[in-house]
Length: 467
Image (tube, rainbow, N blue to C red):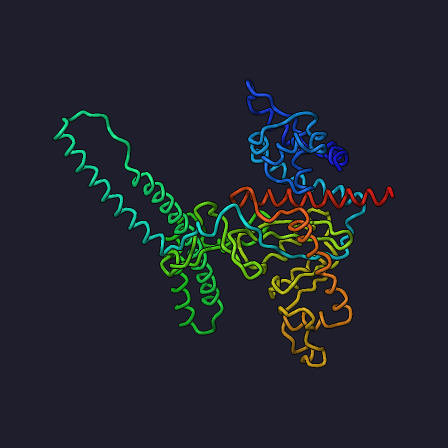
């Protein structure tokens, strides 16, 4: 595996990393070879060694890592700095490795299965605070700080009277050192939460204004047209007050670069966060999500997996817990990464939205999406019990499709394609939480995890061919 990783790194385009290193004045430091550092990281993500401290330790104690490092022992701070500095380039290696898998014949694109898994972020859910509690804590801390400062002033005045003025200033009291940084963090989190809530409410108002304008143009009653036009104008003015830098036709919710929708805090009619809206002090981009009956502070990691050899053909990550809205963007990424769209796409009930079948049909993809969550062993509604095809809704049409013989046979492959991939990542290699913080950084780290998965598949396929 070590020599395989070295061979693969020799095939990768490292120009983005090398160019960035050349642009920086490195006088006074001894940079390690980019090829060695990339190989060290990729091999670590293949075998379940993710932290920079463990990577440094392995270069002393593990023969495989000693071979990779070529006798060098980069300090963990160097490894961590290299990873953070070149995250964008490291993320781009996913597509390069995927192309190697395609060249080896591991990607057929006959069918692609999609799913998501919740992963713990580098933050604790106990470091999250609701908007209502932020306001109360901010007021309480400010009152306590004011009281401590007043007592300090009284003490200073008494000491000046006793000892005379001009003495050296004493350190801040311990109580102030604890409270002031916490007050700053709460105010920063509150400001960010209020800004996001304003954006969310403004977009909602722009959507309402757009619907009202449509009603003003299409309603048969002239009086209703006039009222709709008035509502549209009022809603647009309210939206501009909350978000003056946005256009009136900006109706798109926040999305990742790959097109996945992002979380928006619940807001009141005046654009303030709801009392239950939360923000985490350690990693503000992470969100509290439910996973396996428990709650964690983390992210929703997505993967599209090819059915031939369980190669990940597309990946992304969002801080929005539900999967609905992720299907089409993930399939677009698959087509972009692989050069063409898959013939079939399989997804569970969490990915269902009414517009998905038509969007997939436009891309030439035959899509199979479960329409309801059912316990294992419980089948879909029998075709004989369904209404005639002409009377079916979009959801019922998909349910009928899954109940056909071809639909049953096709959809039954979904869990055997994608779910083992998450098991291999989380159980076999032990990746259960992110090391980095912030949405962009965590997305790049998830790309490294997926790249390591594909490298292992490519390596084992090569060994089977040799055997």
